[in-house]
Image (tube, rainbow, N blue to C red; front, side, top):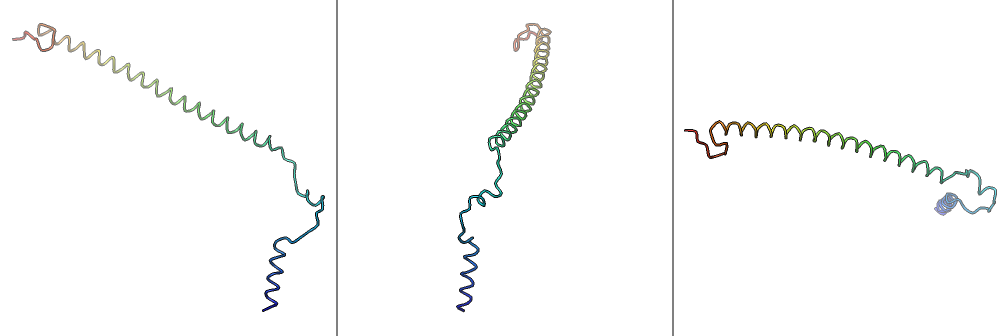
Length: 105
């Protein structure tokens, strides 16, 4: 049992990395010089371009909807004018031209 506890302690210490010398050369092994500003700058530029493109698409869609609404409003106004003219003509046929005051017998 004593042997098992010693082995467990040994393995747990070796798993932690243990001690070691502070060698200046071995500290820098595997490090790469990365231009962090450039990496984030490119990412920010891409995000900004995507956002601008999406905003332009939304604006174009909104403009299209506004144009369709303007056409529909003009058509509705034309129909309302025609209906008003037809009502005025019908009222004039009955005499007064005023609604509710017809002289038709």
